Amino acid sequence: MTAELVRDVMTPGVVAVRPDASLVEAARLMRAQDIGDVLGADGRRVVGVLTDRDITVRAVAEGVDPLTVSARSVCTPDPLTVAPGAPATQAAALMRAHAVRRLPVIEDGMPVGMVSLGDLAEARDPGSALADITRADPEDGASV
Image 1 (cartoon, rainbow, N blue to C red):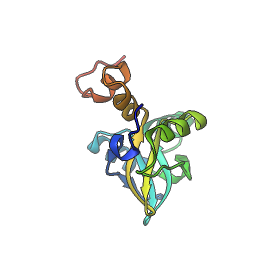
Image 2: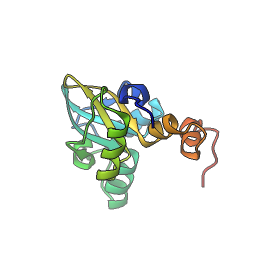
Image 3: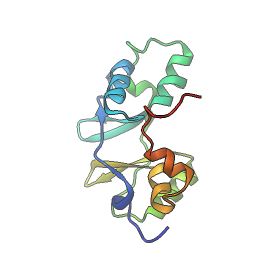
Image 4: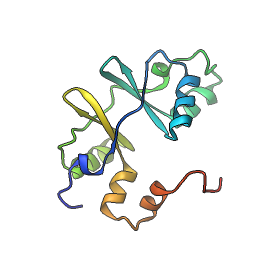
C-alpha cells in the first residue's frame, strides 16, 4: 500500500442511530441506506458500532425481540477509531491486531466516515476479489 491516508480510502459520511433505537429501527435504516453497519451515537459521541451480523448473531439467534431490544445492547461498545489523516496502513494494522473489519473515522470528535477491509483492499489492489465484491451491487449477486 502506498502512502495513502485513511481519508483517501474511507467511505465518507456516516449513518448513525440513537443508542436506544430498536434493532428493527437500525435494520430498516441499514436496508434503506444499503449498508451493513451503523454507528450508535449519543449526540456527537460515538458509543458503538452496530452491524447486521450483530443483529443476527447477538440478538435474533438468541431469540430476543428486535422491537424491544436497543442498538446499544448488542453493538460493539467504544469502538476503535482512526483519524482521516492517519496512514491507511495504520488502519489496516489496527484491524489486523484487533480482528475488526471496519473502523469509524473520527475528526475533531465527530464521525466523518468509515474505513473497511473492502476499502483498503480496493485501494491496495483494485483487481482483487475483495475489491470486486466491495464494488458489486448486492442486488446483482446471488444468495449462497
